[in-house]
Amino acid sequence: MKFLAKTLASASLAAAVFAAAPASAQVQGNIAVVNTPLAIAQTNALRTAFQQVGTTYQTQITTIQQRQQQIETLLTQLDTNNDGGLDEAEQAAAQTTPQWQQIQQIEREVGQLTNQIDMARAYALEQILRQYSPTLQQVVTQNQVQMVVAPDSVIYAQPAADMTGKVVAALNTAVPSVQTTPPAGWQPSRQTVSVYQQVQQIFAIAQQQAQQQQAQQPTQQPNGR
Image 1: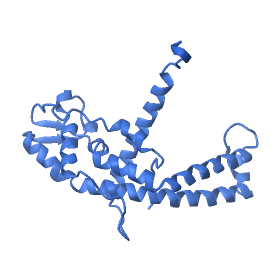
Image 2: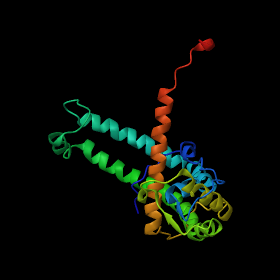
Image 3: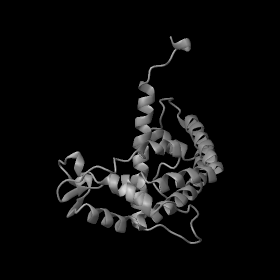
Image 4: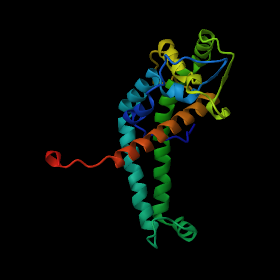
């Protein structure tokens, strides 16, 4: 299995999306909004698991970064017109070069290493996902909600209708921790793969926002000047 994921998103970066909505928010009416991928992304168990995977697979992560730099160097060699990219003619010519063969080999290696990391993360996520439905039902019953809808199905809703924070709090209680080592032969379900990809997109957006905020911060001068 190979995920279309942002594997190198660090745990510290992922933490940007772990500030859940207030669990004490009052749900008004019979309809509530819950963002399932965001709720799972915000759980303490997933945050801790991603940190553990980052530590356990640090060698693989470092190797992936090094190999990606090698690919960039090789692509630069194939960019004959120096425009920063490969047009159709350059791509066609590149496929007969030693650099292209080397790129293919490196990409296979990166894919294998990436898959190891993704499998560990997905296994952690799936353990939370197994408890999601009963936990959601518990929150629904406690708040006397008749219908739960996803954010992309809503045209307008009051902030109080968002029950994602309550689900996060309940998941933190139901699943305080998870394992990150998949058993032999384990394969993620389709639902796990789908939610994992959505969670990785959340992390990618958080990374963009963090980078933008950092870029907008004024540079401090020495001695407070």
